[in-house]
Length: 341
Ligand code: HPA
Ligand code: ZN
Image (cartoon, rainbow, N blue to C red; front, side):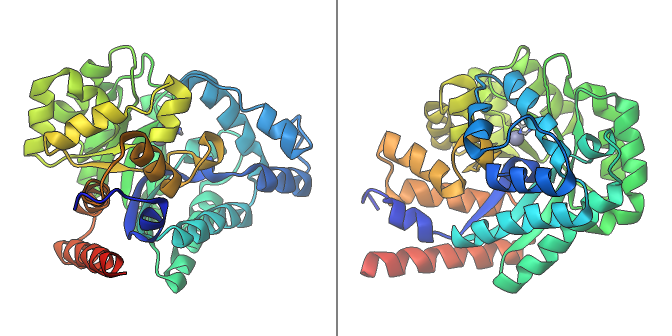
C-alpha cells in the first residue's frame, strides 16, 4: 500500500511498546504533586521551572536530570500511580502489549524498598488488563553500578520473579560494556528471565559493545542498537537471528540531534526487525504515536512501512506464537477496515 500514513492511521494502529522506562513517564505535573505530597525539595515548584531544567543534549546530561527527579517516588502507591497513568495513555494510543523497563537500584540506593517498587508497578500492570493492555515488567541493572550490585538485585528479586518478565541494562554506557555483567546475565537466563540490553546510539565503543551483547551474552533484543549499520556482519547476524531493535526517534533527536531515521530505514531494507518506541516520553517530548509520526512525516512513510514497524513490535515481543498471530491478524483487520473508509 503506497498510500502515505497519516497521524490518524498511526493513532488507531495496534502496536506493542518494547522500549519505555516507567520512570521516564514522570510528567512535570505528577512530579510536582508527588514532591509536595512527600515533602521532597526538587529545586523547582512550577511546571515551567521543571521544563526549564530539561536542557540536555547527550545521554549523560539527560541522566543527570533524570535520576535525581526520581526522589519524588517514595511509596508503593506512587509507583502504582506513575505506571497506571502511563498505561492509560498507552491504551489511548492503541498499545495492546507492553514490556516496561524499571530501575530498582535507582530507588533502593535512596532507601526505597524493592518490594514497594515492584509491587506498585506490578499492580498497575494487573489493573491495566481491565482496559485490555497486557503489560509486563523488565528489570534493568544500572550499568554504571557494580556487577556485585546487579547480582544482589537478582537475589533480592528472587521471591518476586513471577512479576518480572525480563532483564535489561541501562544508564551510562560509557566505560560500562556488556561484559561487565556477563555472569549476571548468565544467571538471569538460568533463572528463566528473557534478556535485552541498551546499546545506546553513537557511544564510544558502540560496535564493540554490540558485538559483546550479541555474540557473547546473546541478548534476544537490543535497545536502540542502530549503530549496527556500520558493520554488515552484525546486520546479517541480527537479520538471521531475528533479533529485535527498539528504536526511539524522539529520544535520539534530543540526545544526538538526529532521529537515526536513515539508519532505521536502511535496517528495515535489510529485513531487520526494528520497532518504534518511546524511551522516556515525559522527557523527550512525546509518547509512542508521536515517535511513529516523527519518523513517518520526516520520510513520507507509506501505510505498508508503518505497518511493518507495528508488526515488528509484536514479532519481537516476548509472547507466544499464538499471541503473535492474533495481534498480527488484529493489525491486518485494522488496515483493511481503515482502507475501506
Ligand atoms: N539509555 C540509557 N539509560 C536510560 C535510557 C536510555 O535510553 N533511558 C532511561 N535510562
Ligand atoms: Zn532507554
